[in-house]
Amino acid sequence: MALDAIATDQTLSRHAMKAELLDAETELKLAYAWRDQRDERALHRLITAYMRLAISMASKFRRYGAPMNDLIQEASLGLMKAADKFDPDRGVRFSTYAVWWIKASIQDYVMRNWSMVRTGSTSSQKSLFFNLRRVQARLEREAEARGEMLDSHQLRHMIATEVGVPLQDVEMMEGRLSGSDFSLNATQSSDEDGREWIDTLEDEGSQSSHQVELEHDAAHLRDYLGVAMEALNERERFIIRERKLREDTRTLESLGQELGLSKERVRQLEAAAFTKMRRTLESRNVVLADFL
Image 1 (cartoon, rainbow, N blue to C red):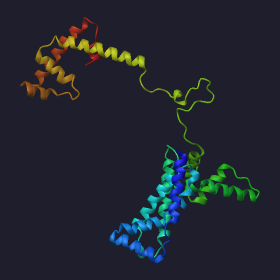
Image 2 (image 1 turned 120 degrees about the vertical axis):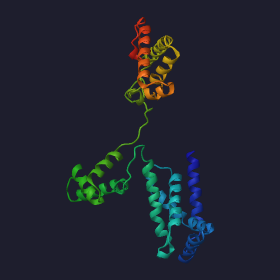
Image 3 (image 1 turned 180 degrees about the vertical axis):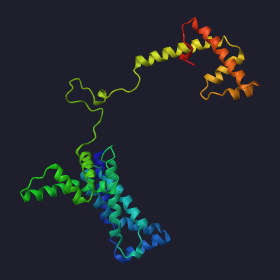
Image 4 (image 1 turned 180 degrees about the horizontal axis):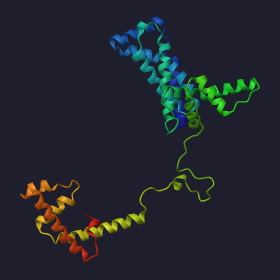
């Protein structure tokens, strides 16, 4: 599979290198044809001519661990966005304009896929992600040349000033870049039995024994309820079902309207039904409040 990816990368690069080189006049004509007439052939020539630029920029981001084929695809998307938004009236070469869109598209992809944890989304966080290590290394070299030794606190302050971002963003990004994602199915090296990390996580769900007990009790309560309901007449059973056994229980007033009774009369019938049910259940030592 890796060999197939390499072959694909090389094929794309070869095709890009064979593409025509556009002079400024031709580039301008193609840009106008796409903007004003939505000429897809003009767009295709423009995109194809600058794919070498997209591939070249994509290759600079390989050190972040993303597959080259994916980087090229993101660079291509950036190139197409640039072509769609390019205004030839501004007097700027398309290649100059496209560089920004290609780079932005690749950077967004790298940051999205760097970690399962979101690495950053603001402009300052993006700037830190791609520049922190480089700026840090330069500041350390310069301090060493002056015979100085910077502690971590001083270094963070200097990086924040150099990049123009808040200190807290520097501290946050350092923490995120210092670690990497690990699979919970990875084996703990110190465990001779080969236990996985996921086995150390606490199970927040119900324990199986507790769950069985709950289901057992619920089954008994359903049986007891059925026996208690048999002691009621049809109207009393209807009132109990509507008042206590439905998800959206009904009011005394609504039941009274349906049965042609006053709200107070429905309340009395409900109380009488509870009394009958309680007497039935007392012989089984079951408390009515357990399920009503």
